[in-house]
Image (cartoon, rainbow, N blue to C red; front, top):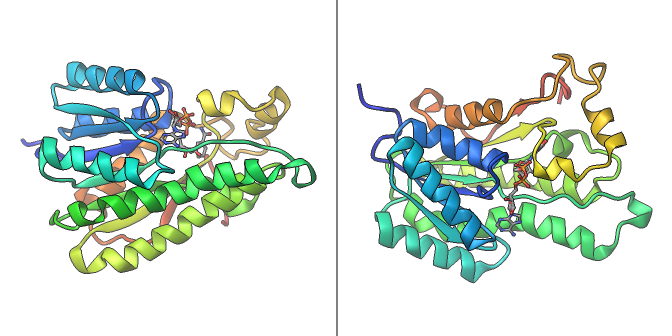
Length: 255
Ligand SMILES: NC(=O)c1ccc[n+]([C@@H]2O[C@H](COP(=O)([O-])OP(=O)(O)OC[C@H]3O[C@@H](n4cnc5c(N)ncnc54)[C@H](O)[C@@H]3O)[C@@H](O)[C@H]2O)c1
């Protein structure tokens, strides 16, 4: 039996960290036959990720250094995808950053930085990828948002606004690309222990993983987010576009 993503090419941004969500998503798609383009800021780190994917899953993978806040970097990255594979079927906009502070202490620079990477980066990479992915007969775009974008979190004016923006972009893309059968959805993870959340203070980490705050009484796992992204990339979600799924153990039920 052929694998779900055999013959397809997937690009995942922010995939360098071995314990990050991007890598777990790349692993899951590669394990089902997709060839992978992994993108992150540092060339050595992303080359290493690509080599590990090829070795582990026997697929073809390339690593590209690209800052998603720079239009030229995004265009160059998609140029390399075209050169290496000639096609793009799946785009996962996962790159993201945190820079928490209370509104009264948050600098304008920190607000702009987080908005630029998390929200504008999704716009720029998608814009660059549009021509190529619209040629796919069954294209998929999955944007990684956050429950913080649904509920708003104290200390996260920049992050919550950026992730709410990602949901709005998801709806716009879904409408604009529907005529070419490119489906666009978002995933909103709750708390998952990665390099990013490791930068939060112990007090905040404790609060976010407090069992009384999470109905399923535990933090999430990278693989659980990857499984939801996999669903949105698969044939099983063929009639779903312009929506989001929370992967948060119930933390934001009702949102
Ligand atoms: N971990 C969580 O609890 C959690 C919860 C909700 C949403 N998310 C979202 O999931 C995504 C992945 O987060 P993670 O926890 O794996 O963090 P992570 O820090 O491990 O991964 C983020 C990656 O993005 C890369 N990156 C940052 N800025 C970039 C840029 N300008 N261009 C290209 N790459 C860039 C980083 O180098 C890093 O490898 C993020 O969008 C994050 O906001 C995470």
